[in-house]
Length: 510
Image (cartoon, rainbow, N blue to C red):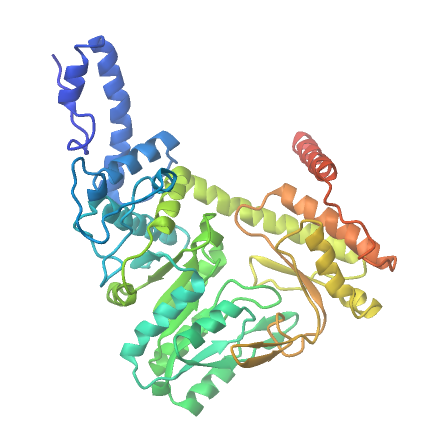
């Protein structure tokens, strides 16, 4: 009788002896066929373990679930006959909660290092290591080819930046300032405050419609404060127009020149080849110590995780050791499932579609803007976000701009931002004039829309249709409070169907 080769999980999987025993109950030919079917799954698992890279072709859910179940039975809380007498033994009161986490209950890391292996949770530890390896593969594939190390942390971007700043404190104990080219987003600003440092706001310079990094001001502040007193430069890639990504290459050169660390907020930049290219070039020409990106914004998983990556294994490991205690495995599990399901081909297709939607959104929003005497602001250095002027609308009424934002929200348009002139807001004790516009005084009010990963043509068409309706209503001078928002389910379904029909007709014509 031909012996069926064992898979890589021979300690827990249905091995050759079990298959032989099965032949006493079911026809041997059928069992061998079943064994070969299982072996196809196991070969994928073995390739993943040997290479530690994202598979080119996405896996079926059955393979992903088999893999996760095999990992789970390697954790002590799932051992048959296990007797736990400690305070943290992977006990879960609800079966629903256990199933939600695939019974991977122990989390990741140990009390001294989020990347450390847990002796009683080999499966969860393997999940952690594999996820970090696969994510690094994707970061390199997306454009930062010389990135040497990364890890997934169960915190959103802001707290992950804080972790980086706290790690740098040990290297630069005298430092108290962080140089920060202004971007009006609260979490990245508060990340510096939370770490105990004083942000030094570098105002942007206006070039055409774009707000760009003031390199001369950065140099002047270094001379004024002294390089030893500066913890780091905290720069940004992905951002809302008319702000554009910082001049990363030049900032990286300045950091090398003055021996100052450089942390990059790359929140939703993995999806943009331009943002990733800036990081790669910055590291090539100068200094970038770490760059931080959101999991949900780049990989379409639930909120709550980030990736901290860099070009020095030692420094990234130092950051991981700064994390106090064990951590939730949920973000790692979510992104692992997602990337195994997509494969590199699937993820690259999403990136390609995002670029196409950016071009489509840009051209259609430009047409709509011109129809109402407005214009699409010229921000060629921003690869994700667009801005449409609301100058005429603002001149029409002092409240029309904020009314537009309210009208879009009640019509179930999420993500669009309207930015009025002259907003004043205090964040952690710091007053910002013109808040949300990234500068004290921009030349017009505007509306933001972004083409992010996962956006569809239908999203763009429905957004433009609803924006058109709102602008038409405001142009007639109607009070939006009396205007009935389109929240009726039948109207929404009808509108979606029309967009689908138009899209199908366009495909048929092409």
